[in-house]
Image: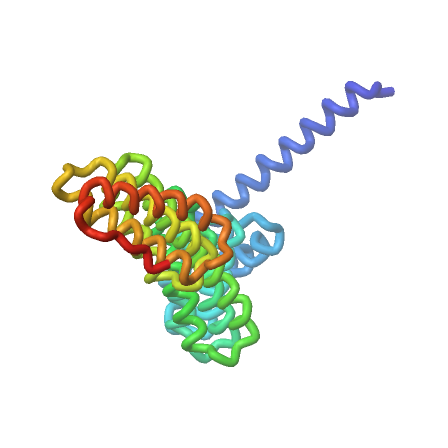
Length: 278
């Protein structure tokens, strides 16, 4: 009678034999010229979640069945297998190719959305290059334009909003980096770009505040001959923040810089009257 250790050893050996037999079967299939068998086994592998093997077999027969009745089915499983395997770059390509090759297919709308969704999944965190994010937005918007009545439009728009927020964060982080590096002109330009490109951004108030800080620090470090005009720009920037956010959380700190700017101007140009229109 086998003890527990013996049973476990036999189970492991049996499992290994099963795996080896399966590998042997797959290798024979790859070498086979029976295209119909490859087609049927590829779908079986897909149903068993063996997506790599599905891809391997379908790769061989895609050219054989091009232009035939089976072409749509083969390309359907080929794209889905890449998606299930987590290869979103290729999945996006094959989903889009399917939608273009079979525009009347019942899966065309779904696959065009999935193509864009794969691009969404490839979008990196805000600190990295956002080229994939912009591509995802373009693809999702293309889907909305092509299928404006689709039930997936709402989800597509939500994904677009999420991606745009990532672009906002990227632009804000870039501007902050310029500020931290004391590249004040670049910081001002970047913060203004954020406000112009994303007028509804939740970061707008903070961006306006950092424009004031950038202008103040830039003026404070400028040569005396340029300080008056640059401190005046601090005051103008403050008025802009106050106009849009009269009760904003950043206004008290910005007001201190504005008052300091007025005093600096008075020191630099004592013979002229400095008035604060606020």
